[in-house]
Image (tube, rainbow, N blue to C red; front, side, top):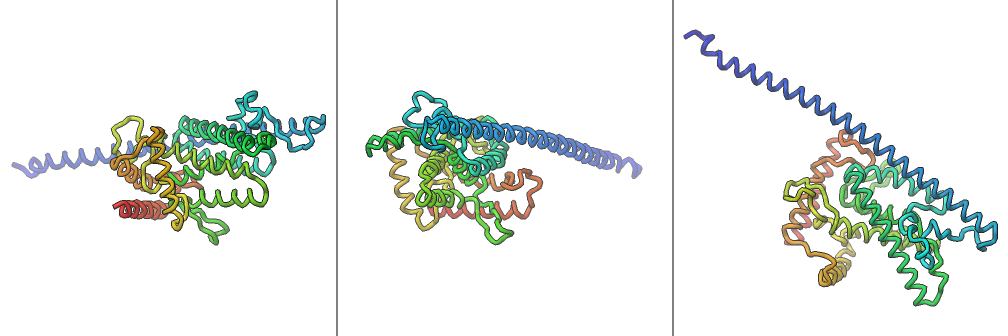
Length: 361
């Protein structure tokens, strides 16, 4: 038997392997091109939807300002800063203008808050829309707007009745403070260990600390500037968004532990517990109170307790999100994120999850 005949099967195998590698490379190149094209199209869609929301907020601001000024000029109110009940949620008139329970969230009363909340909705909304999808993001905003404004109306009506001051129920409730607070909660869930650098590296803050800082700033504003509406909205935004994300919203299954086609309901991870939104020094008392409130909610069947499997699955989701390379807050492209940064963030997530597991044990 000649050497050529002996080596013939081997040569055919090598040739087939080479052809397989080339086909695989071609397929990967095609997939990357398709993915790049899809990402570009998604970016265009996100930009378009963001521009539409921003334009809508500007239109509502102009309409509210013009209507408020008209009421002042014709003498219907003694102040040019009076509330417009068919754009803002006014507790005493909410039965006549029920649509304000939703639209009031997108109405700003001055140019400064318009710019701040407009930027928040555009950039933060674009990030969350890419992470969750347009439908889930829209559902999140709708639940937040309706629940926060309805809670504010009930709170101010009750306060006015108890204190005997009907003018409290005449306050206009509106603005995107609740949206800002809810976005920070969502960022805390998705990228808690991401570090935001301010002033060219002089100040570095991790995303997980933003909710507590935001509440503190609104508390200071309520004390010295009288912005009690913004303070209450910031708390309601945190509580409502955390409750929705913790117990009700379906999360994409990144760890492969779910058997449901809709993903995992809620987020039972230890790192997303309510006490983890605050500094370590005050977490024990907050956790004590939160557990007692949760026990009451479970007793009245508003909430369902998490099982050990739910908690373990939630902790695996935290690790999987870190390893999946979610888009950074300042750069929505996964490919544009440095590998070292993603690796460090994944390591911080893993260490945090292990610490939480150690505390539970």
